Length: 149
Image 1 (spheres, rainbow, N blue to C red):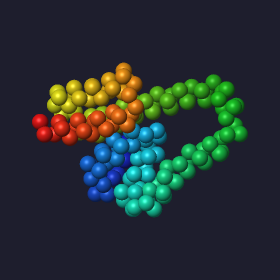
Image 2: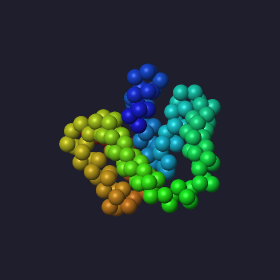
Image 3: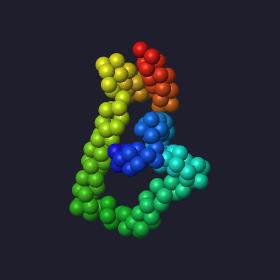
Image 4: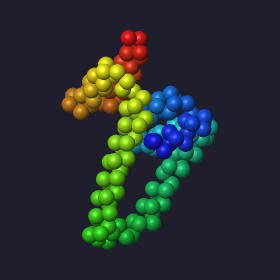
């Protein structure tokens, strides 16, 4: 996400507000990065751009699967490859935390009331097990109401 933001927002291809709106909406559905790629393509070049961006985001993974599928069982049982995959998983967790902090946290949590609202939304998702679309809708309505305070 930070890479996408640096490439799209400062160049003027997308406003910060449109970027964060699309990212927030993409979080409500499975596969947010794929959905976000389609959103970016559609914002920049209409439905044709959305289709092209969706194809482009899926193509590398598809080619990787196609190229390694016949070797996957032997790769999975290799101790060094297994260790490398664990390292890749740890790196992905770090990247996700970084993407959460910048731009999401730094542009959203500006005052204590923002933090309290985010904690309520988090509780709705994790503890009350409400569907993500409910949390996103509550966040959108609550965020709008908080802007009037």
